[in-house]
Image (cartoon, rainbow, N blue to C red; front, side, top):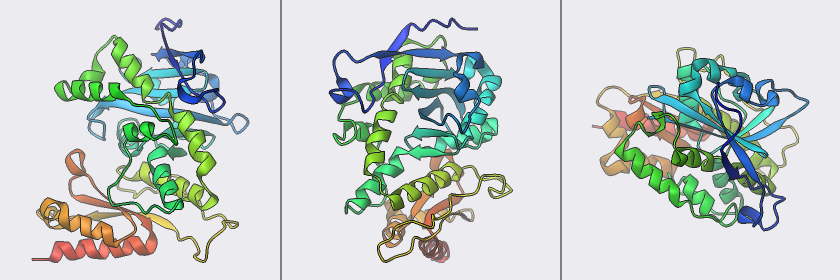
Length: 337
């Protein structure tokens, strides 16, 4: 088992910090490299309604999806960061985290959960749930404040960190790591973890709790419901199996007391369309023109598996009527000669 005394530290900013993100003299918290479940907090390993937690969460790996390999899971607590080493700790360690990752008592704050969820589901049978996806929250706040979202205009994590409303810092090291990943896709597999690997992994989660609190201050009741539903649908998105999500928990229902401005909120769903061989090009169109026009016509998220797959599916997330409209348009493109 690895040494319990951490040699790495990082600042985890909290809303109470005077001066915000980079306040001088802010307390440093330890970064623990975890190779055995005994090194993780009991309240994480044994979720309870008596001690609800909010943690920052992310995953690193090689080509992270159903077929890639998960190498590290990062957990950010207010008083420590845990780098769960899936290579050294193996399946036993990751599976020890399953109750927490599936628990409704632990909120996992993450930026774009889709591929992380897919890797956890297909590699470890973990159904990630109760996420607060900061990418979804950003779009909802933009809409709430009257700025309609442009199709495919998803905020990147670097972009979110740079936004002064949420963090206001530049994340130059992220680009350094991206370059290294392009040069060597196996970057996250090497052990022992280098100083750069530890710092990069910690940086991907240490600001998430601060951002979470900033966003929760802005989100109204309808947006909070949309956030919960879309987070659940994003977690399922690429986790398609033969039972069509029958073993996943039910989606959050529309609250009875949800305030509405004239329009009743509509149930949101995930639809998965099969695209026959050779027809995906028609759906996407030249330089993406066809799929873009569908996205501009429908108030729904339309996702394509792309290089990570699945290559023959289109995923549509949104209100029922908008999803049905998108389905009809996509099927129409498949028939176009």
